[in-house]
Picture (cartoon, helix red, strand yellow):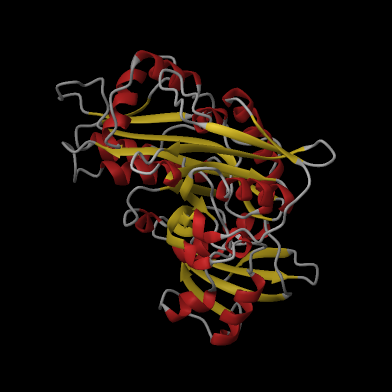
Length: 442
């Protein structure tokens, strides 16, 4: 199961008329911001201000402009404002694949750059922007939307659910002790331009192995490699792992902060670590933990079931902090549920509530012995026995999709209604191939 080869082009999707009218009623203009127009600099500064960033230099702004192919930029403007050309609300969207199961992908309406000026709060701008994006994506036939968030309390009201959590690690490198594999193959330092290429290559090779991971885009690899135009990061270093057959299987990007009080206790921060196979994974992390003059290793955006924990002698050398990261919002129930495989056969009926109406209804999932699911929208009245009926909101179904939370957990939390037996079946059927993870921000 793979994504459809031809997919929606976000810039071709028209603005949502309901959001446009809602904002017009408040004296605000809702419009597309052309990538090649003069308004882009104001849009960029508005996004930077919204995320407490600094003003863009001309070089940074041009590099950003050059990276926006395939993006759909939307701005909300106040014609009565001091700078009517600078938006008071922004959102950016494009379509990329998200992994929903082993080598199974869906095209996702990827939402980013959601900001509202602090001078224009409580005017319905955020609601108009987010509902506008969801309605536009739904009308365009995109089955799912996703985002990563700076504020976790906002997005549930629009039907998003936490689909993948992430972990940040602080490791006492001297205490940890390596007991993992010591593979053949070699490690070599590489320059940042080679790092950029390797990140792209390895992401394409490995993203199908973990639910929640994404296709990525060219600008992402540029930034991770410390090559952002006008704002390069000379601290970024990299090593490549090549296996015994001479194939490139892993790449590590990292920075080092010296400890001037004790140079033998400096800190190494892992920016990105991509590995195609166990040997590459072990080689990269052994390099990190046994690096000269390093006392502490930090890393973020790691999976909750990271194998590294079981490759060190003293797990108490780890301090792990977990948080929500990847939020998904199902727009097409049948297409999303049919995109993944299930671990046990059986059937269930989902009674789904959706405040925006896109996924509202009763849906019957039938899973065969091979793990393939078929979904049919049915009449909610008497469509199935009570023993296999699940009542839930679209936010909860979106959280269940990748298997990042069990139905039994949601049942115990009062987030769904189901019999304990049905919840246990869902736990087994929706079990992920590995813990969902997203290794990047977007």
